[in-house]
Image 1: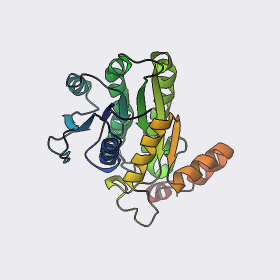
Image 2: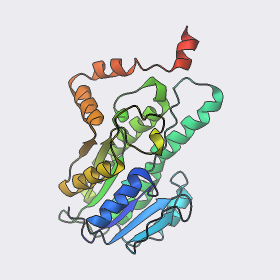
Image 3: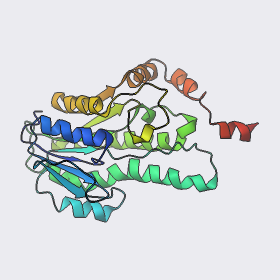
Image 4: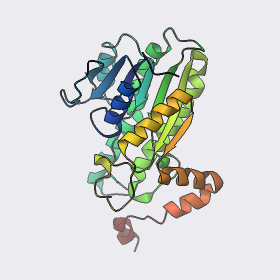
Length: 254
């Protein structure tokens, strides 16, 4: 797919990977880029191709209101996400963070896809398809105990993505899975001792995947290596992940 003259909706577009996706879409010649954020004025890009849309992905009424501002759409990128590093077993007050991860990372794309798919399907054909990209993580395929609830939300999003692909294939809408590795964004502050990929590199790879109609795209050495490990030895990959037990749980179990 050539992005020239295409209209694109990107959730969580005010920073990190989302903002880089907006910039790369401009570079590729998209005619209109709708970037969503939760606060007005947070999308600080002065370009007449870019329109800020205020939308809370957890709120279906907010998503409906956003859809009413868009007349046509070719590509939807579900990028908005949160990470709180909450283990499955945690103190009661931490469960609110697990709830937010499920609401944003899973229910958010579910809401957005349910409201926007008719717009994506409108006037599409086998030569002019709509596209949905769900930005996930290799943690959709393996679970680290220190961020177990985040992994659970991404596992759910992976199931959602594959279910969508099956349901939408006869409506000329392709569904892509994007798996960035550890990315240098606000979500990964405090992990500066680990190698990270830049948001722009992630965005470029995702846009290239759209252009080439790839079903899956992995970005970053850690993502590629993990995907390979999971493919060759899924049990071994999970056993390795299980070694990263949160200190709080070690105390409880001892």
